[in-house]
Amino acid sequence: MRFISSAVFGLLLIACGEASTSEAAEESTAAPVVKGNWQVDADTSSVKFRASQDGSEFEGEFKKFTAEINLDPDGLEGAYIRAVIDIASVDAGSDDRNGALPTREWFHVKNFPVATFASDNISSTGDGTYVAKGDLAIKGVTKQVSLPFTLTIDEDDAVSTAELDLSRLEYGLGPKADWVDKEVAVLIEIKATRLD
Image (tube, rainbow, N blue to C red; front, side, top):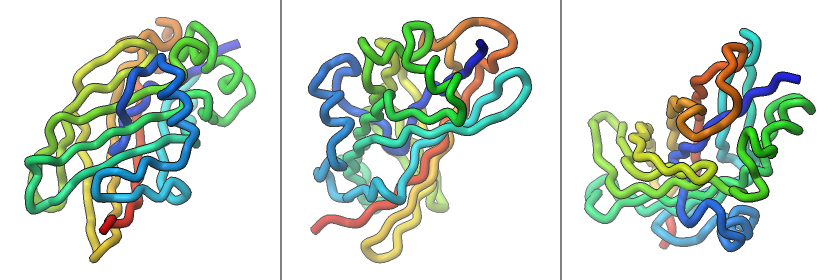
């Protein structure tokens, strides 16, 4: 059988913690972290991915994640994003892919139950667009990434979208076979409410 995965994570809110700890795994199934100055609405937010298998494009989703955001567009000095994605919550649109992704060849969920993103710098590029630079950890591999995202704030409500292109092989995900697209797009939409 042939399957494909995503590499995730990025998130405008992908995140913090050690990817292989049971504590992080427990956090990933809990309610969204209430820290920072924004409360993420997990019910209306999403972390999806788009990939291709045998030349056919498909879309999947990680249904459980937590995120902590501290961001003031007027003062980005202390801004940060922390996120944790529950890898076992993946739905790649088919029983074959869903059965393959938790295995050792792909995400090896038993040893690496979560993927994390922790930004160490957020900057504005103008016109409501930003870049968060930080560490993305998947399957025990940590790499520095730049996550571009849009941000629209209407009083106390915010909407952010992001797209991050990743090479799954850099994170040890899946075979090198040509029938599996090596590039994966991570698609993020975050809706949040300002905290008092």
